[in-house]
Length: 324
Ligand SMILES: Nc1nc2c(ncn2[C@@H]2O[C@H](COP(=O)(O)OP(=O)(O)O)[C@@H](O)[C@H]2O)c(=O)[nH]1
Ligand SMILES: [Mg+2]
Image (cartoon, rainbow, N blue to C red; front, side, top):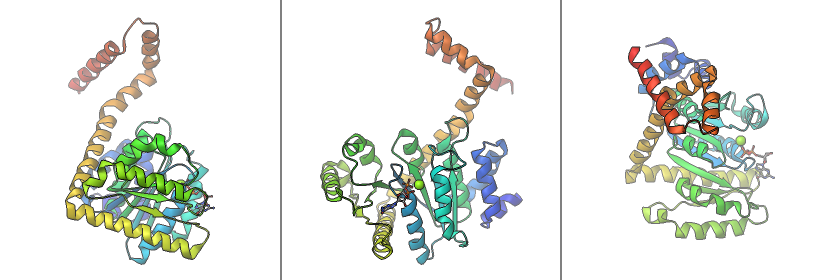
């Protein structure tokens, strides 16, 4: 076995960190390493935590780590924040906040931000998760921002998803409704000491009562979490959350739905890999050569239509593939 693969599988932090950095930087060799690592993945339970910026996801994650460590579980955390420049912002805050776990060899925390082109964040996240799985982490927590398509793509790499809401969001919940209902296994009403928490709970409960998912055997519970600055009651609330996550894990295992989730995850992985193998190299070469701009101009002035352009590009790409 490749020595770096061996080291990662033995839990070596430096090797794992380096590979995650290479994945983020799209270093071509990283792909070969993931291929070798892959056989050593697939045993961790992966939890997605998502919600608006500032909802308190990182604070929750940090407290969850403490709780899960009491149960002797080893933890990987991946914070994915495309809105944050990699030099600072929320991600730097996360690093500082989670530093109290820095001495704990059972905890491995990394963050991902997009560098350069927007595409491929889900791909990078999926692979970073693979690295943590190969390290042998029992539980991997993936923190993502908001509920856009990109986040849903990332969250498909998780087995269980907690959606964090805070009181005072008003109509936002209505607009997020469709996406939320599809994706959430557990709802968290965070900062519930704030005004409007009861109303949010009522709205959410009535939405859940209308949702077809309730007939599916698992009704997403609503976990109420109060002030993070009141350590004792906060720890109790977090224990509740950990309990619900555990219950969902057991539910997935006993109902056979874990297999469905693993299928969903495999689908996400193949789509990401296809995008990386087919679409991204094409877009990149067209961007570098300036042709993409040129095609856009032709389309804009109606000298060409997008399908003819795409067909021409596809033909050219496959011809090149044949020659290789
Ligand atoms: N007042 C109050 N502030 C909180 C609470 N939980 C988190 N925060 C603060 O809210 C801000 C955003 O929290 P963070 O965990 O980084 O949110 P994220 O963007 O969802 O990861 C930080 O300044 C936290 O200290 C809470 O329960 N009460
Ligand atoms: Mg955060």
